[in-house]
Image (cartoon, rainbow, N blue to C red):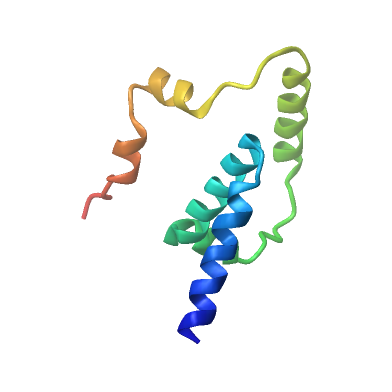
Length: 96
């Protein structure tokens, strides 16, 4: 059993060695998401089956229309504009 695991890890290393740079990046991100407990919880969470309200549908339509003529705003830029960091979000504790 342990030898199977060792062989499998060696095969994974060999396969990763044959990937194109963009594929290595994708695999890296996938592995990080698989190991992150929050990402795993989100991936396993049930799908939100609540119907979209008329107001939400209108907001989505406006956002899609805006994106036709504008570049998306990166998450980091939004945080910078708000004067907060990702670390602050991750370390936030709600008041007791």
